[in-house]
Amino acid sequence: RAMCRGVERLSAVPPARSLACAALPCLLAAIALPRGSLAVVQEVIMIWPLVFWQLPMFPESEAEEGDARLKRLAKIGSAGYKRYLGDILPEELEMDPAFKAEFENADGDRQIWAFIRWQKRVYSKASKTPVEEIDWNGKLVPRYDGISYAWKDWLESPDLKDVH
Image (cartoon, rainbow, N blue to C red; front, side):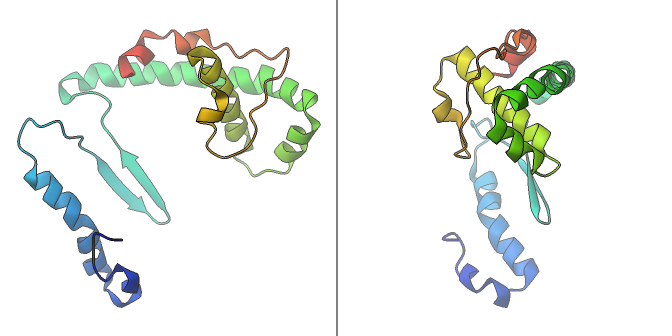
């Protein structure tokens, strides 16, 4: 908001002018950067009411191998998601009646949010990072006895190490 005067009165500004006003700082920054600088190129696509950010994960010279890495990681992620839904989620729901009630009353994305919750524990354990440091929505991420928080295929993937 501070980058463009008159944004507070956005309704009075024609849509094309507001878009130009919002895009101008990015354009100026891109023009001002010298060639070979350590800039990150990004693409922003706005689809009302969503914003998609696209950042390159690999240099263009490694695009083909980068795509292959991402496909392998997607395959590992998909297998982990299926494992979570089939083996781990039912145990979590059985162990935690409050989580089960919340899960049963949630929207269609509830399986994804449950999987993300489990992944926070997996990452916390593997990285020795307190789970509170990676908990962005304020909900508890309990650790259940008897639940596996191991995901060897993902954590030991050479492709994941290349992405980092």
